[in-house]
Image (tube, rainbow, N blue to C red; front, side, top):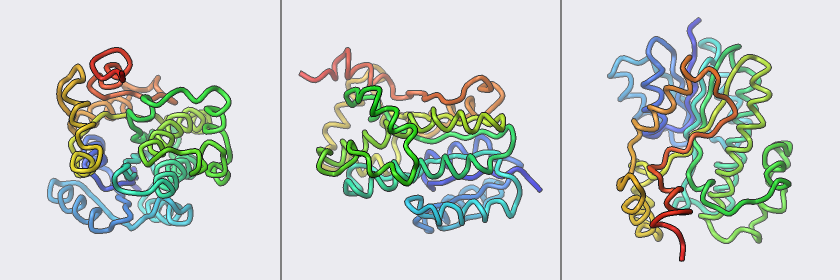
Length: 275
């Protein structure tokens, strides 16, 4: 039996990370859009990786468990990469909360039950969770510790309390970071580690949707006026994940790494600061 890499979300960031850590391992790619999974599988297979695909809707616990069971047919899940999600321009408020917030929480919980002793995972969050106003200790703890099936019942997550899809996305990503902290304590009982990465604007098909969406000018201004002066690449996110998922990151768990070219810093203290 080989070590298994479980990847949810067949996009550029997930593939870049899987290529860094997936050599000599069985890579299972799950995505709601099976065509996306097929495309990633073709690229990786032709580059020498061992890839299997399965349709998976991360807004469904049943679908997540079907994917996990499929992955376990090949060996123990040693590495977990969650890069699944929808953007503010791609989905309504309810879908963003169901996929990006609830779905990520279920993945962290269910993979944590089966992760190999000493295994490691990373989930992709977003700078957006850092840019919103502080929610306070009580709400942060609710996002971290509320039983997963009760998360969407929280008052802060009721649609009438959410301004728009960007606000929903920010709440989801804030929850991701808090949930990683909480689950790291569970994963640690197996000597396993789980962290999150909060990328800034990374050039991917999802980002291009945003550039061409109603907030396109906002995002273009953000990367033009952040310290790096440019958007990032999937490989730059993979650089961070490679450290977190290797022995070099052995003392890092329950953490979030902000990799946004300084956009968040500029939002609070630089050119991007709101008037």
